[in-house]
Image (cartoon, rainbow, N blue to C red; front, top):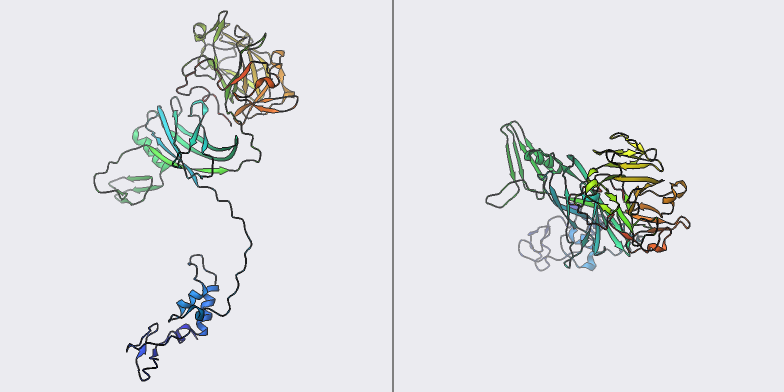
Length: 533
């Protein structure tokens, strides 16, 4: 019997016992007949109960709504309501206890909102506003933001996201300049760290690309390029066709109409005059949380250039040991404002340092020391030349460094700056001055994220007494060759307890702490090489 043939789905005559001769029909679902005689409430048939039970046991489809419980389905199947005790089946199967499955890890949907970028300011100063959105409330109240790019001064910058009393995050502003930069795409790598007890507990990363247009590019060309890379909706009308866009919140649109085409854009704006114009570009970058190793060795004081200052140097010791961690290190003239080099050199005479006079005969970018297949090499990129063991190698002709090599800057006037290669290490080079500035400074030129191998070091006695230093995880470390202990170097590190350090030594975060170097355009420590952290 089908459901349509059951007693609950066909028309019946009036069943009121007080009107036995009534011949009016009762429609399915009605409680009175056509003569307004109340009808008796009958219990559902066994077929209706079984059909309702089967429908509740059937597995729902992927698009169907979940079924109601069995006793609710019974009420929906019958035409007349009955008490729950009468509609519920006599036997109710006991629910099967499912095994306890631990909930899967749900990553926080966090993104970085970037705004304020104006491509029209080609070759000028730019400011990016970065806002942190969607961050979990369980993270630390202060997060560290680290950016790395060739556009940013010194190659990297570090800021802090601070949670406000309202619960949101205070935005961060990052400045950079595209002056003297080749037009094209530049990556900006972003890392957000959450610290717990001085160690990195959580880490989020993302990478976005900024396009630096040509200096002679027109405004239309600049915005066509950016719209073609940042849009998510594009409408074109060619050959007298019509392009029409309506609605859509948060869409980046590119609408083009050519050859007598008509382009119409309606973004559900309020009535009245609407000013359409080119504005600054803003977008969202998703922050991806990455897994950290169990034992994190994050450096407590990240730095790519620093200095060891000796307050009371003894015989043969230098007052400053300058540390650099770059793939390529630029040697050049000392400048207080916007220096072009990483290692800033000046002439020393019998009276001390002279930043004028013969120092002006050094080029702003005089020579480059970089890693090569054979070890390390030096290349002359200056106007005044470089003498290597008394011989000028020629401009833009790299020469491999040798232990004890004499480097003179420049070739036209001797004695301005004279350096000697006192150590060739697996992870860097040590240079000592052998002119009047020998007691003033020496230089560690180290490779970032390269582990030292003391057994393969080639050093003169002058460099053998210096401590073994290397760069890893964004900062400088000291290696005790006897015990193998590695100690991160920071301003609060007691250096007199480390091997190779004399008393009265301290760690400074700047390579030239005795001078106030102003780097408004970030010309130094960013053009000469990419920092690897």
